[in-house]
Amino acid sequence: MKNTIYVLLIILLSFTIYSCAKKSDSSSSSTTTSYVGKWLKSDSTVGLDWRSDSFIYGCTSINNITFSAHGSYSSSNTRLTWWDGSYDTVTSSGSNILLTSTTYSPAELATTCNPFWTNHTSENTSYTNLAKSIGYWTFTYTITSTWTDNILMSSMTSAKNSTDNNYITAGLNEVGNAVIGSYLTSSQIYDILDASDSTYNQYYAFYINSSSSGITAGCYYIYTKNSTPTTCYSITSGTKLYGTPRSYRIISEDDKDKIALQKQKEMTKLINLSSKKLTEQDINAHKRYQQLLQIHNSIDQKPLKRYLQSFRSN
Image 1 (cartoon, rainbow, N blue to C red):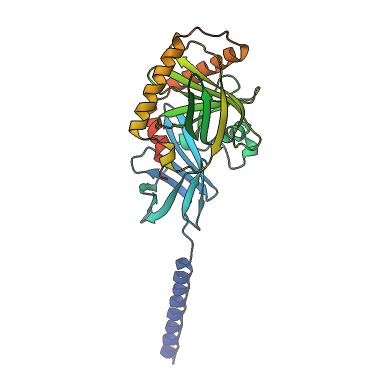
Image 2 (spheres, rainbow, N blue to C red):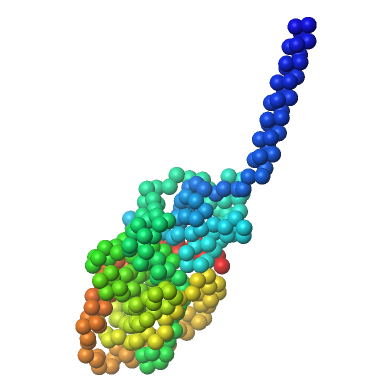
């Protein structure tokens, strides 16, 4: 009789364990994939701190400066959308994840990749203001000819300007070279420096409208490499878009060479002309330009360019 009871208990216990296991399997199979965690790009150049689907922090460190981007993920379309509007499709591959076709593996990230802002923008005034400048900008101005320049601002850095300690931003011009920018709290002026050309530097200073979709006024400055001050050329149009396809952001090599040559010729003529009288606005702009140029010259441009292009897949 005892043996019979033991056998029945063993059968009952086995059935209970089997039933629990089946429930666990059924539950896990319906669980949505979570990518929350820390990830490192296969070449160890870019880290992802995936804190939640609404706060994903991409980062790298160059010359002891952290360069970062903010993104969010939607499971409905499996897209990680970066704050400039571009996106990557996310899939899993074993223990790794793929951002479009780039592999990221689980990792411990260096302290330099700790977010220096949070998801709540009101907690950081510098972040709140500079986030308004993130996006794809189109500036139109006239010197002797009319020009339209396209700039994608996509990253915020831990570097700060020396005037009011605001962060420095970074992005790409239309030929895929790195540019940097900042914001001056006292005057509410945003600025972008493009020092990628071999013969001149371009500096954009502007006020952003209340909807952060364009500018209310702005100046374009062209400086020789010896930083000779120049006068303001009014930016007649400045608009910002999100999610512009990469084909519209990065022009072809042929177009790049043509534009560079045309602009160099015009700048040479401009430099040879007699300078107009500089205004206080021009002098202040030149001072801000020199601060940004100093920061620009302290950053290794090649790894910065690779980082800024690393998220660009659309």
